[in-house]
Image (tube, rainbow, N blue to C red; front, side, top):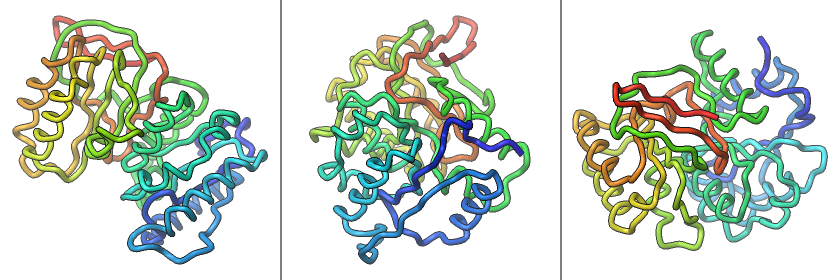
Length: 302
């Protein structure tokens, strides 16, 4: 099976900016696939022991990232996993070097904190929606789903601003058409960034959101915060992805309609983006066109 990386990627650096190495069977599956595809990679182990539930103390996790970034033989940086911890490392990241090297950095979930902070610094090579363990550590994926994940990742690595594994069941919220930069990621992580130096200005962007294991009240509370601090009214458009594990998900269509109406531009829900496998992926800050027609057709892409 053709792998997810083009030949232009000489070596992949895998870094643990968030949680640690608890999920060995998923990491083993990931590494076996990378080996089978012939992908050269390096995954440094921390020099210090795990800190709480994270791979190592904050400065050590950031050091690994910065060291991989400084390695001129590495063309792609791949977050190992999410969980928690990325926001704690942001003050230690070598942002000047990131902008100078400008190589792709991929992750999602808790890595939303890093990707949006990087976007705010002017970085436009952050890939949201794929992650080493979550994308290629699935132990028994169906052949179709694995092929979809590989195709989606390869497209976005090769430069597509947004790629989806499948069309999914999309639901029109607000009609319209707009071309604008795409931003976003995990709703809970973004909510925690509001009021910090790491939350970028999202004005004029198409915001794509996903979540996991929050009930409708929690999602409502976070979207209220987005509304009340003025983010929603500043957007060009909004897209709701997958909100996995929501115990009262029957409330979500109503919530999505309500908060989409706060956005001046078009919106839809049902993009296959988030913690379900496989996931859509996009490059933070790249231009995409979002269109929701009067008869309910919903499209987003480059």
